[in-house]
Image (cartoon, rainbow, N blue to C red; front, side, top):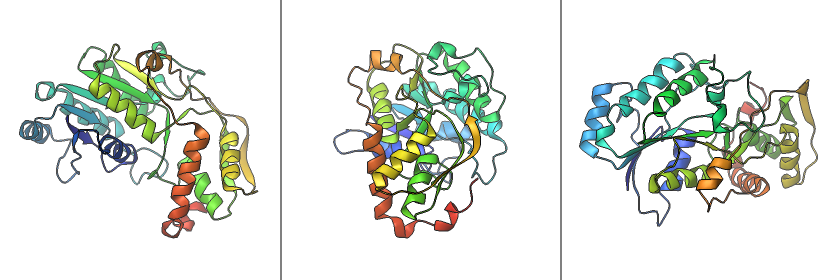
Amino acid sequence: MKIIVTGGSGFVGAGLVAGLGADGSGHELLAPTHAELELLDAAAVRAYLEAQRPDAVVHCAVRPGHRNAADPSGQLEHNTRMFFNLARCAGLYSRMVFMSSGAVYAAGHYAPQMDESYFDRFVPVDEHGFSKYICAKYAEGRPDIVELRPFGVFGRGEDYAVRFISNAICKTLFDLPITIKQNRRLDYVYVDDLAAVVDYFLREGPRHGAYNVCSGRAPELLELAELVLSVAGKQLPIAVAQPGMGEEYSGSNARLRAEYRDLRLTPLEAAVGALYAWYAKRKKSLNRELLLTDK
């Protein structure tokens, strides 16, 4: 298939480009940079799609709103406009895989092991969650759009200054204490596994419009910190700033497993081990100063 991946310079987008473009995939991938395609420009988006005529679009581009974002403003405007500039051009491709988020379930109202039916019980109040919610509501009526809702995604190339698993690994490499703002349960999926799910829905017609993409298991952050230390073979302090447990952020993957029967998720221990080895080989390129201040 000829596939356009938006947001290919970001962590998730780059991971999908690497996974979908693996040897033997048979895909032709295009991941236009911001200079090559301004997703906020409706005319430019249509012209690009008319010129390329892809089979599918994997939409990962997002206005970053995480703690390390240089400018987190405008998420609602940017995220919705990028999505609709692509969605309105549906006749120029056959399918869109929209990278949504568990944030559509509305922070502050999360429940353990949320399934897809939990959607729309609450409307998110944060810009990121609300932008994804608006796009998800629109996608409900579009058989050519499949919405994927990952919760936590981790892997090579994420921002190790703020993303918990990579942050813990990098701190361990420098023999620094692992820090946790507040312990909580969080469902993570390895980015390589996310790429396999995207590939499945590019090749197969979905039975539903939306799918949680998660492990179905939500370890505590404290457990993950201990796992990193075990992989490293080190004994270092783990500092938890706030007592008690924060809001759990986890989902059920029953719908995904029922449909994607050959789904194979990398065991968390194996994924953390592989990621630790990847960072260890690149320790000289890591900026230790970024690990000294928690954001």
